[in-house]
Image 1: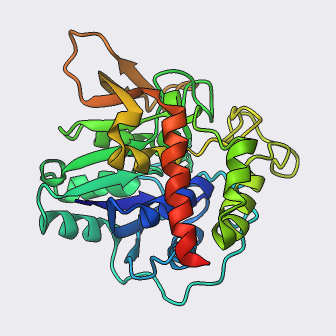
Image 2: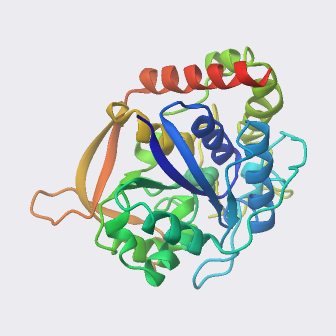
Length: 324
Ligand code: RIB
Ligand code: CA
C-alpha cells in the first residue's frame, strides 16, 4: 500500500535528493511536484525539479510552478550553499518537457480536494505556496491526510542563531501555515543536522551508477564545501552562514523518509509560533513543549540515523538499478 504525496520544494540540492528518494521508494506515489522560490529563483527551482524528475525516471510526474517571492519580503536565496544552478556541481540533461500550465496553489488545492484524506502534503522549501493555498481554500487543512515540513528548529537556526532557512525566507507564510488548524509535522534542524552524508554514505552512493555519479555525488560534493561561499564570503545572517562545516546534512530527504518510515523519527507535541518582527529572531520557530499547551505541531525530536541511511541507501540502490 503506497502513500500518495505532493512535494512542494525549492530544488536545491537536498530537495533534489528528496525527489530521487520519493521517485525510488515503492511505498510512495509521487502525484505531483510544485516549486517555490527559495534556494534559488523560481525559474531555476522549477527547471531543476523538471530535470531531476526526468533523470530519476519520474518524467510523468506533473511539475507546477508556484510563487516567485515570499508573501511580503523580498526573495532571499542560498546560492552560496546550493550553487548558482541550485544543484551544486550536478549537471543533468535538460528536461524534455515544460512545467504544467497553471499555478502550484491551484494544483495543490484541486489534487487534495479530489482525494480528501488521501494525500500527504510535504513541503521542503519556504512555505509561500502552502500559505496561499490555505488562504484560497482553508479546508485544505482538513482535507490532507498529513502535512509534513522540513523546516524550523526547536533549538538553533542555520541562517541566524534563531532561524532555519525555510522559515526565515518567508516567516509570514510560516505564520499562516502553523495557524491553519492542522497539526504540522515539523522535521526541523533538531534532527536533520544529524542526517549527514558521511564519507561512508558517499562511498555507497558511488556504487549507484549514473544516479550516484551524475546526481548524488556531484550535488553533495558542492554542498559539502563550506569554503565555496559566495564571492567575498558570506554576509552575516546569510543562509547557511551557520551551517556547520563537514559532511552535508540531507535536510529535505528526512521529510520524505518520515512519510514511509515513521518509526525513524520520534515526535513531541508542541505549540509552535513563528517570530516575524524580531531584529535578531525573525523566522524563529518558537517551540513550547510544555504539557499545558494546545499543540499545533508534532516536532521531530529524535532520529534513528542508522535506520535513516539504511532506508535511503536501499531506496537509491533500487532506483539506480532501474537507471543503469
Ligand atoms: O534549512 C534547510 C532547508 O533550507 C532545506 O530545505 C534546504 O533545501 C533549504 O531550502
Ligand atoms: Ca529545500
